[in-house]
Amino acid sequence: MNVEELLEKYASGTRDFHGVDLCEANLSGAKLSGADLSKANLSVINLSGANLAGANLSHAKLNVARLRGANLKNANLKGAILNVANLIRADLSNAQLRTASMIRTEFIRANLSYADLMKANLRGADLREAALRHAVLREVNANEATFKDGFLTGANLELANLKGADFSRTDLSGANFRNAELKQANLSRADLSGADLSGANLRWADLSWANLRWADLSEAKLSGANLTGADLSNANLTNASLIHTDLTHAKLIKVEWVGADLTGAMLTGTKLYATSRFGLKTEGITCEWVDLSPQGDQSVIHNFTSIDSRAFFNETPPTIRIIIDKPIDHEANFAIAGAYYQIAQQYPALKQPPSLEIGRRRTILTFHVDSDESLLPTAYIAILPFKDAANTGKNICDVVDMIASEDVSLNGLKFSYAMDRIKKLLDEARENADNIKKMKKVLEIAARLPFFNAPTQTILINSSSQSLILYDSPYFGKRFVKSLGEHHYVYDNKLSEVTQLLTPSLSIIIDFLKGFHYIST
Image (tube, rainbow, N blue to C red; front, side, top):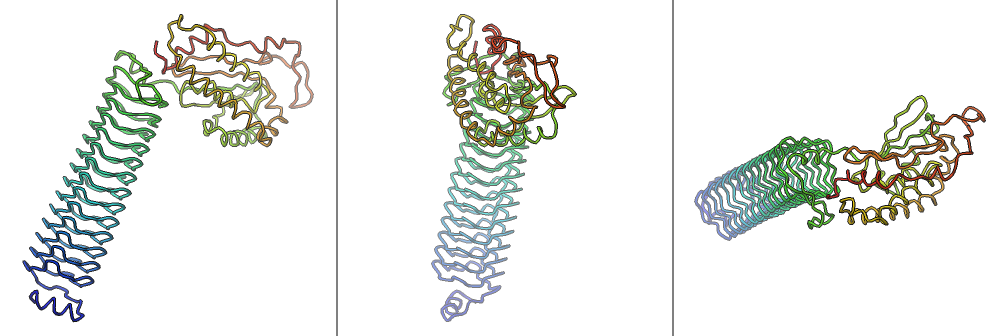
């Protein structure tokens, strides 16, 4: 069948051209929407500007075909062979391209949004500036393909082979790269915000100046990768491999990376505000200084030698310990769970429930916080269910007032910014405490139970493993004067109220603050 016969039959209503041989034919600008060209031989054909919307081209041969500007919207190209074809500016939106072969095919500025390319072969294909928004590229082979300056928002590239692919300056926000092969890929200046890269192989990949905000990189393999200047704010790097990774000047604000392996990594100039530094492997890291300012503007710089940088990145989790001079019972255990659940609704910093250590005489509640500066404000909230809350809260406020009123620069500390931050957080905690107290159901049950009326100690442990006894009830550890039943006791009330409200000394507080890793000395 020649071109004239095909067009004549199409005009008369025929749509079935299954298996037709039109190799090297010229059908430029032809209107063939809805035509059945499945298993047709269309190699080296000219279909530039043709309308093939909704056409069936499944398993057709289109090697070296010219389809520039063609309309292939909703077309079925499943299993088709389009190697070295020209699809520049073609519209393939919503097209079916599963298992299609498109080796070294040109898709420059083509529209493949919502297209299904699952298990397709795009090795060496040119997709510069192409739109693949929400396209399915699961298990695709795009080895050394280029997607430069393209748009793949929300695309699914799970388990794809993207080794050596070029995604530079590409919009990949919200894309799924779970367990994808991206070894030596170029993702420089790409937008990967909110992308799922969990378990992906990014060894030796170029991610310099990429946007990885809120990205999931848990279990990702980033050994030898270039993350210079990358923005990883709020990213998840839990258990990621960052061996010999270059993180110079990267933004790591509020990153979750417990269990990450940073062996031999370069971290000079990284921005680390509100990022925990415990549970990391840091042998052989290179780091001359880090930026600890909230905005990453270098207003708070921490300098150190290679010797103390490893200790800096292996801090103790800042911890609040409330020791109750009484063993917990089932009723109190239930009340604790309910109280802290309700408190967390108002104060998200306590969203993680405390761990419980139960002894024959005492109970220990342990809270881990995100940063040293959160210790005092969070302790103000954590103690709320207990009778000692008022006295503990007063001690916390007295400690902050004491430091704020002293000329601590004489002690070699430069932490005016740090104290401003702590005061701000404490003011917020006090406001939240007032709101929590108005939620009567939160605390009224606890107030009726003897466990919450027992004497307490509140101890803070900073990221340098230094401890501060913030409050110690004078009744703590004392013998009971008399018993009023199995669970009710009366303590010696002759102890002075002044003794009860003693705060730590200024020198002890300053030593404790020196262990805060965000303070430069």
